[in-house]
Length: 275
Length: 287
Image (cartoon, rainbow over all chains, first blue to last red; front, side, top):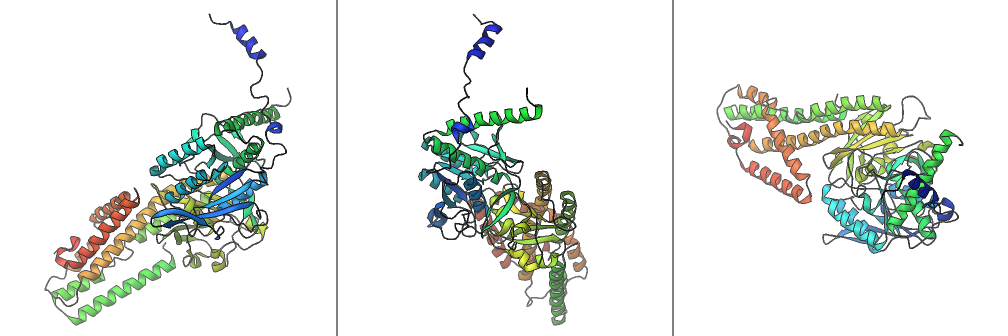
């Protein structure tokens, strides 16, 4: 027999708030990302930048040897600047996170899809806790290899964060939402004030407009693009992983969802004024 | 409006072509000599690419106005290692820019080309250091910049770049909305750039075929109107068929590295085959 509406309402009121315990205070306040390994699969990192000195634990770069992509220690830094910019955003949020630079773009690596896939594979094999992918490919050839890799990452407990394509085309792996955390940019400066758009292909919305961050040579730039929204979320996940190292990727997404709901509620209350 | 550098190159090629024709005519007054002179005078160089470059420049001008910048450029692939060169540029230092080569992965343009993602950079002058190799070469000072990839199908064929705003600094940074607008125009420009690249291939192919087909030691009698006929061929609709053939090859090549290699092998084989053929056997030039 179906319960009456009144009974359902009464039951809902009596039920504890499922998300009540998930607050910024319980999740990341006081955390710095200590002990969390964050891989940045990108154009390398300028390890001499004052803001990044001592934070990059390892730098490797993709090279092709005997027709296969392999990784060797990298001393070539970051000619493009993209990876350094991402690293700066992550360390701004999680200053004690251990950064691992996996270079697949740049002068010595032409940035082929093959190298990109190999870079992600390397990060998963190294059991990185968080993997920042502020890049992607639109070539359908890579749909399956990246999908397979993401499944491996998921089961290995690696949390992959990927930037959405800035252009109106699907890019991989960002659209493979069920196995990773996908991010699109919005305006606003507070990285913790992110949103969650469940039901959309790209779920997370984070600041990515005129983000001031590190640039090779010791300087800073203000950059706009989804590439710079992605490391905001990667940094926040590093904080969560420090607090709760055993969380699985889907548990992390649940936390992000719950906090985003709070952020949304806060915005609505600010707009509407106090009740 | 093609750039001056491009015009100079075209003029140089034309002069070389006419010189060659004139030399041949002096050597031999027979039909073949006159035929050689006629065909050699046909300016294959730039006949396909120049109109496309004009269209790209016109569209770039419209795009720049819409995005709110008057210093804009289209960069295209320079070799197959990820390098870039300027195909068209608008603004104060366009001539100097045309001589700049951007190595693989260097600068914002190299970054956008390798990542396939647009990027906007706000006021860099606040942060001190000189901006880029292009600035060093041109003496221009980049303050704010927007770069978006030019994508034709799955291939990135170049980069569309806007630098600074009209007037004097400080400049308003490019907004996400302007980034979206640039991407919208980039789609149209990318199609033209892709066609330009294809046309360039065809021009090279024609040029090589012509250079190879005309062996100065062979003579034959003929008619004076051949020259006119050959000139007509340049604007004949059949050109479009050839262009379509090349586009088809590019479509196949864009499917993957193996297909690309296959197309390269086919074209190389075709060029070698053509080089062995006499004028009477070469496609449009069958007489």
